[in-house]
Image 1: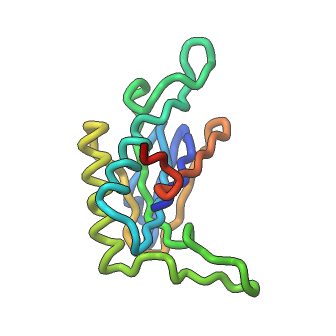
Image 2 (image 1 turned 120 degrees about the vertical axis):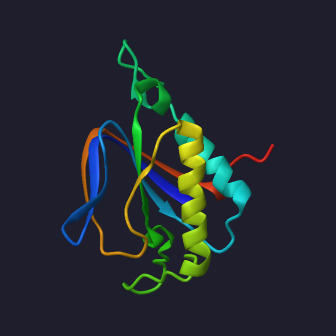
Length: 152
């Protein structure tokens, strides 16, 4: 499972001209799911996202987490995070989970994040042609991959 977190002052997702989700301060999270991902990966990543201390404190240092700023999350499913680009100029997405695996995992991630942060997670629509609008704050962009976690 891969996630790209962007610290934002605002973000929204629009499908067919209608806003499906929007937040103020918080994280825009682009989430990629692959077949090998487990519930353990999902829970680890949800905890990591919610606990990431990248928001400024009174001294301007990145010491605050989402809960400290009452921030929101806009979660967008993005299979292209598993693009393989070694050969040619057309990426392959074979590692990305198919919808029958990815949709339940995406829904579980929404539920896990909501349980941790104690508020509704804004979303896009899985598989839709989404238009994402954001105002990066910093910019601060963090990439995470559950395969890189320390299992000790």
